[in-house]
Image (cartoon, one colour):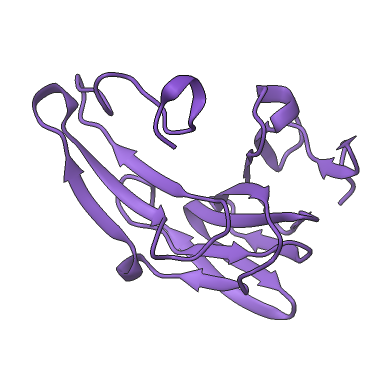
Length: 181
């Protein structure tokens, strides 16, 4: 598959193809580090992130991710019914994705050096907790967060009941404008 955009030597697939549902890059979002993409790989989709670690998170359906000749099974009924298996891929590796018609995955990446190996994280390794109360009650799933190893990526899935907030007061944790890092 050929990318339809290249930014600073990195290939990106833009929405509008049959496979790519969403692409967000540091350049398009005004961010410094993160890339995010949602793809429906069908019979085949390939991603390589030089200098970036990648987390492959199934959103729905079933399929495979092959890295360095090893194939990993990825499946999920939906983001509302199951915790995911997460495939962690360090920089410099090619990921070949394929799956059924319902298979949809997200790919998140951040700059990294390659300190950790390819690894499939299982749902039973992930922490899940209830936070807040009242109008800020929510379930927080630590999908890729300490103690699960990654260099920069930290992934959470947050389930917020209708009519409530994911946190109060609205805030961030990026060190910007005095916020905690």
